[in-house]
Image (tube, rainbow, N blue to C red):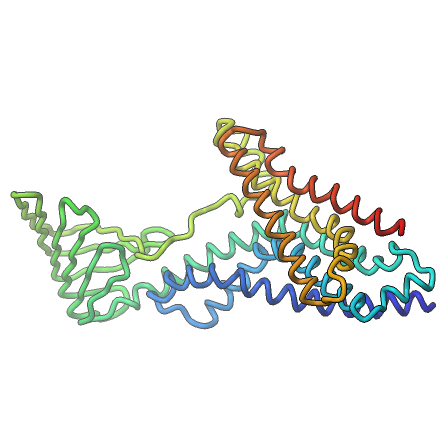
Length: 357
């Protein structure tokens, strides 16, 4: 009964620290993506609710990284505090085996593994698809309204546009466009009126009527008069492309089989990463408690330092191994799984050593 109460209190402190670590790490990692997407969304006037939806859809892709990080950090902070207060010494002196002391971490580790597998194999791809659909909806609905009459518009890369009148969000009058997408042949377009429609996920189509086009090329110039002209433009900011993160494991394998061996390596690496990162949670439940004892009496600060160092080394080896696999120097499964295997052997060794004391 006493052991149950001790484990309950340890698990409660561990879960609280884990949630704080997860929220903090998610916030830190997601800021880079939010700032990058804000360049795309600010020009079309995305609302606060749009930004909230986008942040929510970004969370699953962050969790596959932050779940193991939060597990290790929370373990080191919690058990480091117990060690600093000599509570671990008292428990071991009373005859409690080290593996029994580490039982709350085992529970958290298995839970993080199951959550990580669910996110990496199902929720992650679904959320990335929803993110793309949301971005497309926001752009196609709000971009036309962002073109204001009498105001120079720079929504589109290498394009400057000004509209004299805009009766509604889909129609324009008195249009002037400077097109510098082709640096060697800049163009000037004018039109009496025009309409706006959706061209693709991240662009708009303009149909210009009764207009004139001037094309400059070195020492020559071409002038064209037109009754109707279709112009498709993409937004200036960086556009998210369909990535491997949107594919399910079955789609990754099927696509990899249809491509050449070299082109299939990034697909296999994506699949390996989705499996290896959740597996790290099982390793960290063995590695965390012994590492917290290495922090000595430094407590939370020492545990946090060790946790960050472990993840820096692990992700360095992971990126290095994946880069070697992309260049064809080693097989993709060795590049993807070597850091996890090395960390696994180290975790088993250090846990057995501590448990035999």
